[in-house]
Image (cartoon, rainbow, N blue to C red; front, side):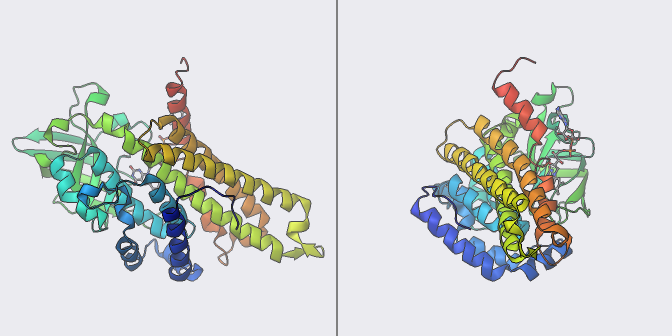
Length: 389
Ligand SMILES: Cc1cc2nc3c(=O)[nH]c(=O)nc-3n(C[C@H](O)[C@H](O)[C@H](O)COP(=O)(O)OP(=O)(O)OC[C@H]3O[C@@H](n4cnc5c(N)ncnc54)[C@H](O)[C@@H]3O)c2cc1C
């Protein structure tokens, strides 16, 4: 589907061209449907993407990366997400949960150890933030870490820890001092996902089925003090990491997935509306369908402008907490509107296994919830704009 010009640099235009071809050839619809049913993603294709150097796009050059080209990394997510989350998901676990977070928050020793491997796509991280009693209110996490001599001991439970069953490390938010005020009690730990005392139980869900998200229990998990993200001196300093640049970029990563999926939904509906004939003409000639298609495509364009405006600010190291929150809020909510409109256009066939529309809609419905809900983004924006409460 032809888009308006976005003035992208040549290397991103070329990247998109390569990825479109890769996705068309390697991730056709029958494979996507099989991965969706199996809750699984193709390891060998992720290896091919890593060999193309894509995981290096969030890693600084001195650690074997390409210098944190956030716009290019966002474009990678967008292109991969046009085929669902089966390739975009693992890419995010490596380049963003791993590369971006360690580059921003890791100690010099952690950067030296992990970033070269992450740049090559050899390590995958899972995000351990949510818990059974904690969703948006992350400063209230109950997973407890205490220092015992030269070790850290972790007890507690994480929920929705996507990828914990195959990731190498869980990037885990813990309460490290129950006596301290909440935001001064948080630390991030790098917990090996197969350390003694870690139990992982996959759970079923309808969206983001590149894998099964997991319940994780920590029972007296013992870690060295070097497991504190940022090093021992960053004990109890997790809140700053949660609210910093890595978070700004994380909002973009969810927005980029949404945008890629919404784009695929519009493309599918656009093509279907020209093929399906009712009352003697293609349904795209009926005004109700025409208007839905044009509105969806216009909304898509607004999403694109917001996403890449915020991504350019993040790439250039400029303040972008407001722009990334607006992009996450607008694109996630608009993605749902686009998905539902496209579903209507395709009538009963949107609900059948013959098309990808049911998966597009299932994935889009979750986007205003994951990665900081739309309500939380509105709260953030009201605070950033200093609206009296
Ligand atoms: C498929 C899937 C994969 C996931 N993967 C991960 C992962 O890898 N790692 C991870 O840590 N988490 C993961 N999550 C969890 C996700 O990040 C949470 O669902 C999200 O943070 C919201 O938490 P909650 O669903 O518990 O909602 P809650 O926080 O309980 O909120 C419920 C509703 O109340 C609203 N609400 C809550 N507080 C306020 C407030 N102060 N003001 C206004 N409205 C409010 C919310 O917006 C929401 O609509 C995943 C979730 C899914 C579905």
